Image (cartoon, rainbow, N blue to C red; front, side, top):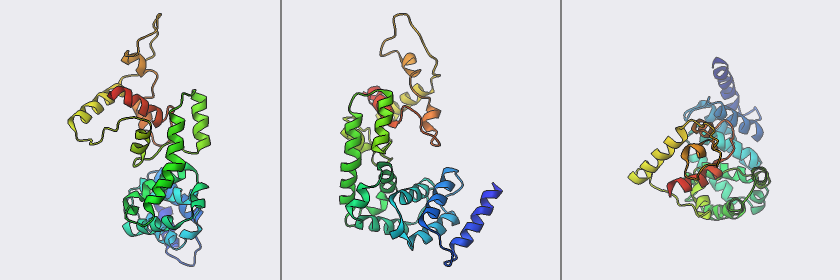
Length: 254
């Protein structure tokens, strides 16, 4: 990846030059792209330069630009407590109209990245409550209804959200009546997750039986669900999504 290192060195030089005017879109796309391509790490000078430039122009960011930048920083495990606190504080001061115009997917990325740093900020609980009312509640209501594959995909596009993020999926599952397992070190949880992994590692070989198959026919059911590697492929969305997977998780872990 010499080309990426060369680009990063040049970008860092320009980001440190306050006479160079980087607009929020530049910063957001750079953060997002390097994280997507796995070319930025927790200590990356490029990300440091992006956050320093972003600190000076926060008021100019749209919800989409903020979401893309924070998604990149979060997925690169970038560490800068002071920057995240600054952004969280700014977000808590934004008017409700800023958030009601944002896509649910954008709010998921923003709140997921900022939650560990914003919980002590004044107004954070109000922001989370707004997020639950305009994103999680409509999503849970939609997912609780019977739907076709096409209707499912169209509904999520209309909602403009496809998941609840790592830190808010528990709240979504609770709204769907799905028990959250909790402590990953609990022996029962570990055993159930091992069973689940073994299930997804089964080769998805289609089965056809003249009289159909029973609901507890593991091999037959396995053929209708994406493979483990497909589910772990974060570079693309696979259908069924994590919501559909959660329903199967609930059934398997009863």
